[in-house]
Length: 120
Image 1 (spheres, rainbow, N blue to C red):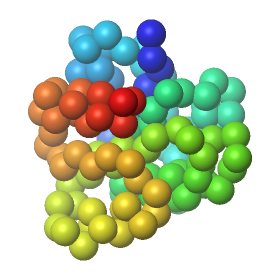
Image 2: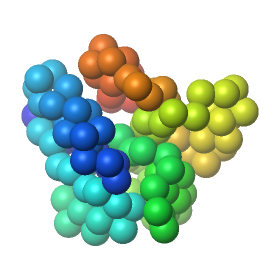
Image 3: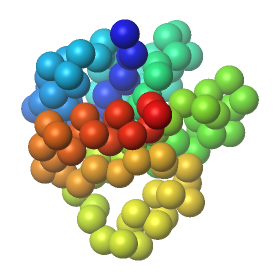
Image 4: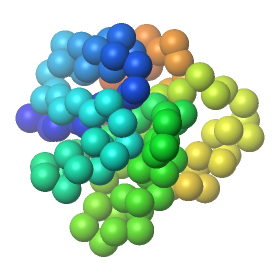
């Protein structure tokens, strides 16, 4: 069973994304901040990270950049789940190493399909 780390500073968003992925058959680890996510990634390397983009102190793109710099985590796919939906936002995320992109509010299909896509 694949493990997905879900990161969001808003509990209702975190719970919703986690539930979507649990229903799809994934094992879930949750983090409520970028710092918490980095600690959990070092403890238990997930198969995918789904992260909010805008969080205090360390946002999703910061998490992504840190993962992509580390040889031990460079291959962990990162999916940005964000309200930012302009083409320039998607382009910037891709330049930072983001592998998938889902716009909030997301549906279960949107999120699960994004995870499946990066796991191919």
